[in-house]
Image (cartoon, rainbow, N blue to C red):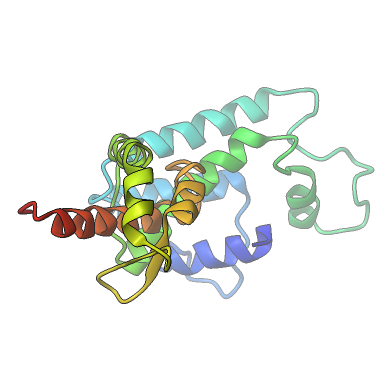
Length: 198
């Protein structure tokens, strides 16, 4: 997913805190203010790690603003003649400012979960789910047989190898909440297969 599509998607998730204008093109610092306002309005009260994510993004931005090589603001010659937001988006890429991107993606994942009713997951629970999956991967794979898929409560099938790949991306990326919820369903399926009461 491109950066601009990701921004549009997150913007639609934080619609309730958007300024009442037709144009919505916040820069990195304005995104911080939007997320802070949303938090103070209680929009992310159900996400225990939201204050940690917010602090991480704030710290990354402060460090980026202090940075001189490269500077956070694009040099005058960078995309000369283009609007400032376009120049900032191009200059402030994930290679020059990886922590800013990581912090924004983490907050974006929390906003997406909130907007779409995806259950919250803390980093601690995510790592517990990852450890459980890794510890039981061989047994789960053997149990799925030739189909290779684990039937989930929502009608989907998921492979162990696919889950191992997805969980390795970590709890701060786009889709982490869906991955955690899928592993919760796999654990429930596994318990039912083994006759363990939930």
